[in-house]
Image (tube, rainbow, N blue to C red; front, side, top):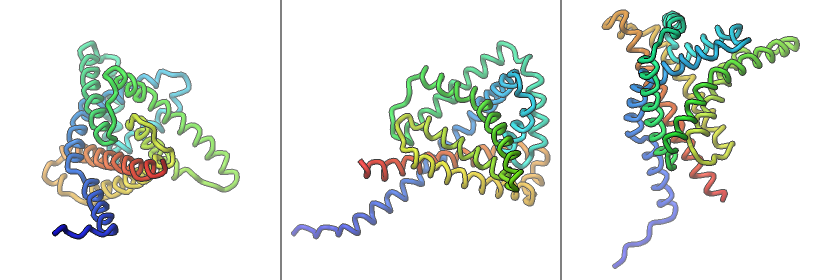
Length: 271
């Protein structure tokens, strides 16, 4: 005797539960750990090299301090002063990097981009870019990122000056808008397929909110909680930095998963 068919409402509920469970994929934590390793040894040195290159552009110097403070507040929010000293030392020594150092950064950067492209293609369910397309795309993005941030800081500063005449202050919103725009660009480029602008904007906004809330909680924990400092002493700065990099990748990867979920649910249903 055949079993009775499952009601449509129960099938829909089971699909929703299955989708919710699959969203919290355990693989994303492994991906975040892998990307955190490459971030320390490849992404951050490459970002600093790109930043040192952009400092050579005329008119960039007057906005360099603002850009430096913004980047440091995202990379190491709990110890900006220590990170600032490290950045100043690195930028002073970048001219003495040498051939071996340049080759090291090039190789580790290629490995980072290859690993990131593989993970992004798994999340967005797309075919990965070929090797040269992936390298040129992300190298170009890394090179233009400091310039784009500097330009956004410049125009928002000008807008802030103009709006102050009307008693409006948007200074506190600027960092959040920049983070939102950064996540939006990352989602669009990483997907390697057309995404609806609305869905990308919504998911990047939610990711930016999660990022900023988590950052504030992380800073509060680093300041109030003394467990790492008590156990590891001054070395706790490095451990907190590693922990924040890992948390950041977790937020970004789940944001990408959310973006793909929006694309699957809304874009396909509208077709």
